[in-house]
Image (tube, rainbow, N blue to C red; front, side):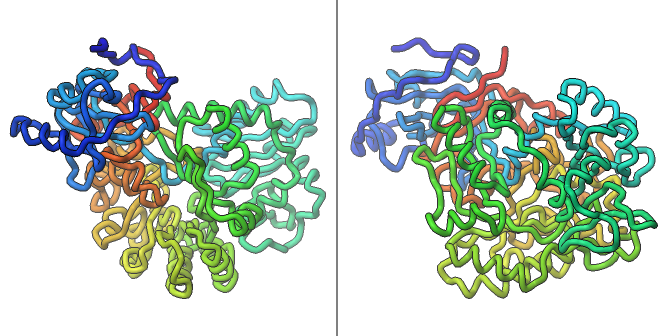
Length: 586
């Protein structure tokens, strides 16, 4: 018998383990003879124990998230050479059943299925590592200081790019202007994305590079150029107006982006994410992901959603959905847009913003144009996911789905609304009746709660971030973070979902506490229900025989510890398809 391997000793496997033989009769005899208080959950293709056994992970408290929510207090999992789960059960009988297997002793630690972020921008996260980080800057002065430090290493005249500013965090909660940047950076173009990615702040040099007259009173559909009383641009661009300047910004070198992507994927693995749904991906990004897969530098699964009615959609319509042979890259969905974001007042509302009378935000497209885009996606046999924040945008999307989906009886279903952030009470039940998945981000609620009531007033806030209301009406929820808009760490999202409080425990009892989720519901939304939203539930999302062995090992029991301890949870190991892809320093 091989010596057991303990946490800290195990390294990634480089050679496949022996293939497990099939033996229905022998397993039936073994299971029938085991003590009554021992649990073994056999595979659909039962196996013969002995020398030909598989890797055995044992001595762990395992939350399977299977249909019965089975919890193995002293559990074990047997894995085959293809990285799939052969069987699960109590450690003692499993150790007897697979006595000759390679073993990993998890020393009583907690195991849950690999977490899936159902809305996170992987490529976008990588790009932020190449730019100035403005997240958390508490004032314009702090933004300028960070930019000055970052620009010190840039060649003369090169664009200074950054992301993460948020005027809601500043003493004076108003948009900045280009003059704030011109004083410090008169000779270099500066372009800074707001934290939500739905507003940008540029200096005069950046606007000049776009070679366009931004003065006057004209606007683009689905966008807004902020202007002063003389009709001159202030430097703030909202939603589709951002593209007017963004289009002339030079792209980072492939070498820089490639290195940044490696950092991003390792970051996700270190935080327990084995999967991400990446909304708004171009053909070029898919090619980069494929390159990383070929190099063996892609320690997660990506469910990619094409970037609207563009080249990636053309390609999918011509070639059909993508699924790589290793099961790490899927693409059968398209992300469209209905509106902007609440923080930059671009979310489309049914009534005026309470703190900006006369402004109801921005619908990106007319009903007719959105209808046309949805029809095209469905005609190609693809899933639709539409970004909608405000109650007007969510209603527009639900109305389009109700009109269009029935015209395509062979459509794949499981269509989504990305964010579903502010809902009118009359629309909450429509998600279930239409079979629409609410792809939501719990951490948005605890980030926005300080100012969301100012935008919406008390009455409309009741339909904001309404997870419990949706769940109770039968909707499927898939949870994510929307990184890099928010932090990547999924433990922060789990904490937000079950408390609706910030990390200091404010407000007492939680903001709109009637919308809180249980821990079981939240774990499902980050695992099996997220897998369902990406048509991947047959392979991942729970720990069951026949599924891929995507799981993480935690330093504490997130289902039982005091809620205030959840954000401090450390991931000790991350496994993808039976391979160790991350191990924390001991």
